[in-house]
Length: 359
Image 1 (tube, rainbow, N blue to C red):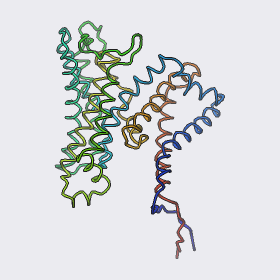
Image 2 (image 1 turned 120 degrees about the horizontal axis):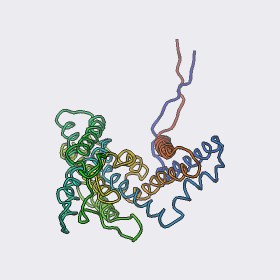
Image 3 (image 1 turned 45 degrees about the vertical axis):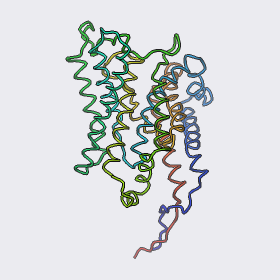
Image 4 (image 1 turned 90 degrees about the vertical axis):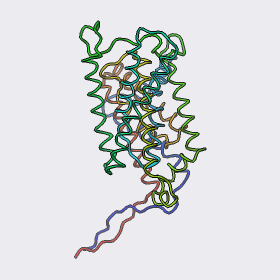
């Protein structure tokens, strides 16, 4: 019996134009699929899409909220790019964000009744150190024991969350907080300054832009960035060139963890102003989508973070005006990732049918 079995075959010369258009195609297909989903739920697709994508940013306050949510996503994603470019799959940015908030927030609580310009910079440094140390753990395990960084970084997320949970219900709990699981508020010197009166956009967006520029400079202008990219493209060529693989692993995870830690500190010292259990709506995981949607390029990540941040705001408006669960935002995020990976696969591979004879 003769059957034709579909197989994937690598394209000899993938189209540069199509590679560039992959994010655009993925977002377009996500919007079309979302229209079908809304229609199946009994809603006018145009009204639903307007509610989801246009209404949230139709006011200056909505635009400011978009920037507030895009700020941590972009910062975490450019940090993840250090790992992803080196073919290291750091899935634990959520844990690194949490430990950055714990380390930096702990400094804020220590000096909550003290004034000084040095408190916020010290908190930022603490956030970077906390995230970097937490990111260093899977790097050490990979170098010393060849463990899978996907599993170790992911498991460390839940450990970090439990550490935060212990602190806010235990030694750091606000004595005047009526037993709610939260800390006291940081002092004014431990809060991110607001950039505009009446809006929540804060100094964290400046830190993010600095981080984006720094990552672009490292990737484009330094030997470290070159080594990370070469190691990701061809580990064999990297070793042949004499690049220190262990050093690159440590460096990638340290940068990735530090960026996530600063993002976590920015959340608790910015919009929130204290520590409590749920400091992040899964920004660390969502930033993985942002990184790939932005093609691991710092500029692309900025635009990708705005697109994904819009799904958070759109989900809130959809729940308010259409009475559908806010989880629809996660559906859109999942669709973006699905179409992104699927489109990239078809750009770099083609489906061929090979004849197979069964005896």
